[in-house]
Image (cartoon, rainbow over all chains, first blue to last red; front, side):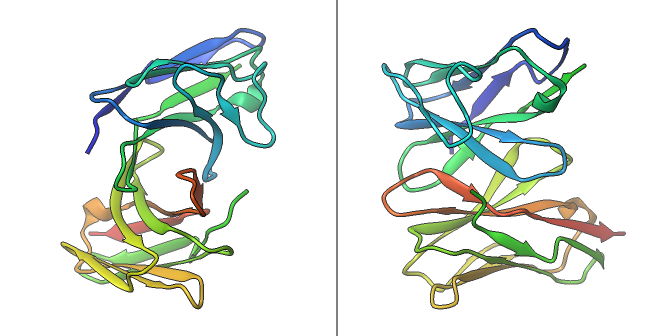
Length: 113
Length: 111
């Protein structure tokens, strides 16, 4: 299995600010994804982080709000821009390395005041 | 969009009992995976069952898959208090590795 770390693990932010979340995988992976989990809810896919090109966003998510970078095969960042209280969620990255199993980071718990 | 639907949404049992959670989905899948999440933390991968498999075991876990009914079940035998968590099924559709998650079952195992 892949070991995935995220930074920060949690943060409390003010409305209107932005937060960048980092995701680091301990080995090269083919695909990385970002998910959001709103309080008491299940996970929803935000986007696929593509290495060397623009991320692929799911319906309801846009690049201006959630810019994503993936400069190499082990690292990705997600920025939550111009935050509002509705953005309070757990944000999780995941990695896929083949064999169909997808592994998740520990998540970043974001609270927006 | 959410495809998987787990039931029950919440389950409370005594230590030592078995816990069964069900998951239904709507479209054809490559595989179905079960995850555990403790107290809003990261997801732990439990088991993956491929669309051509019917049953799979891993320790105290038993997963079944019925593609004709588009459903899966997760059985945890001899449950322990440490099994208290939320359990999610997730499906990968077509040629995509993107996962669609169910709503989850919140399991409480009372000591």
